[in-house]
Amino acid sequence: MTEGSLEAPIRHALAWQDEAFHDEAVLDEELRRVFDICHGCRRCFNLCDSFPRLFDLIDESDSGELDTVESADFAPVMDACTLCDMCFMTKCPYVPPHEFNLDFPHLMLRYRAIEHRKGKVSWPSKQMAQTDRNGRLAKHLAPLANWALDEGNGLTRSAMQTVAGVHKDAALPRFNSRTLEDEAAPEVNREAPARGRKAVLYATCYGNFNNPEIGRAARAILARNGVETEVVHPSCCGMPLLEQGDIAGVAENARKVAEEFAPWIDKGYDVVALMPSCALMLKFEWPLILPNDPAVKRLSEATRDITEYIVDIAKTEGLADGLSPLGGKVAVHLACHARAQNMGAKAAELMRLLPDADVQVIERCSGHGGSWGVMKENFEVALKVGRPVARQIKKDAPQFYVSECPLAGMHIAQGIERVDGEVPETAAHPVVLFARAYGIAV
Image 1: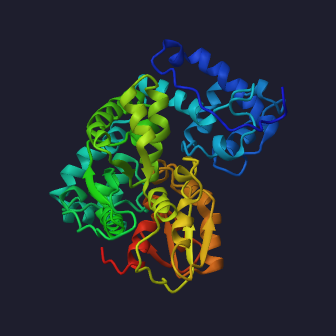
Image 2 (image 1 turned 30 degrees about the vertical axis):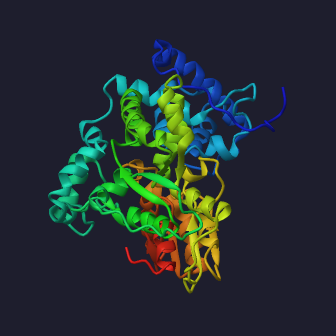
């Protein structure tokens, strides 16, 4: 046995269809094994609120060790996990192939799967996770929905906090009456170095229903660089369901999406996901949930994140001419689910492709954690976790600020306001700024 692992981390397939996976006694034994190792290590103390909660729980026990901590007191530790994967990817020295075999996020997922089976997920939370249905309904009522979602609407937001548990001050995504699927394809530059490439964009729920500007920017950039694009959105990637422990629901979505993308892959199209969380699901989580599904495996191998894809064009064929300087420093927040893809800091690489680029990289969690950070019981904690990011942006005062995750970007902007900082000019995604540098209005 070695002290810490010097090898690349690997992940085991989730045995979610085995009854032992849902055995509470077996889970408790594994929680105690893992928590005791974490207690003796503590490298993850500053990542999220799960670990401070765990360490305080142990330190305040009678013995100062795990043996005098009641299992009933573990719940707050597991509830604070946002499944960001940063402990597994960047901190933990005991992940597989190390003999200790720690995978903290997937252990928290196992706990949530048991809670889901027991019916512990609230009805409002389940409705929030139905992102496709919500987006298609809100499309026809976008002005009314956005009026109700506005943080300044005390009437509706107070009601949402009472009924659904969504904090009245949390910034929420808005809806569009015109989706990305409704948009016409831009004209392709047949003279560009990357001409001949074909990409099918996985619109994602957010990119399709909430902010099609991101997809428009991506398609325009790719068209300028000779890439023919199509937009497809068969179903949600299932990340909101994963957060709630509904692994069977994620598997159902994975099969549906993989089946619909298979013909595009057959025709030689690259698959490009617009949101890092969705790219992570397609690349890594789905193959662990359905390890024996060849369509899921094939889709995983064909998928690229949008920033990753544009950077690859730049490195392989070279970019089309026409980029101009943005005219100021750009702060780029690397979202946790982009970092968990283990592809490198592609958003920062993308911004450094711009002339006279002045890029400030921020590699800390925003604290948002998908739907986790907007809930009444988590919102203030989420702002606390993201405060170092907000302070860094305030200190460096960039002209532009952008995150690969639009929800993280909205959350960090609220954090900047909390530390009495002036929020820089923001964009929904790095590709929006990149399109601007091409002179493309989206």
